[in-house]
Image (cartoon, rainbow, N blue to C red):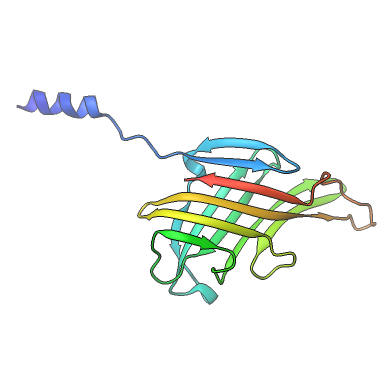
Length: 162
């Protein structure tokens, strides 16, 4: 019986880690699939205290920086549709250093321009679904006023299957 049990465990192996796919389009194009792209759930703090936050930290080779995305799912999140019009607190940002300045990618309920998102949450434990996010590209000039070239477009789209 011990041999059969050992063989069974060896045959099963370690469960595969979930992978999440990110597609970036706009001025930069990139597709990555990795467990590191998957979101986590965390308790909110400050203005989001008592709520559950869906947090993404997505590394991008194209901009050589991380996208940080936080969506407030409320006190008791349930599977379903969420969007930037129905979610009170949400934010997404990244910064690409481009001499002489930087390209800031941002979207949030309290920035201008706002950007927007749609989220189809199919499960909360663990979180699974699809996020589509539109962020604005804001070129930051250098201290001496030289303009930064962030590309022709004014928005970046980010899609995450998780």
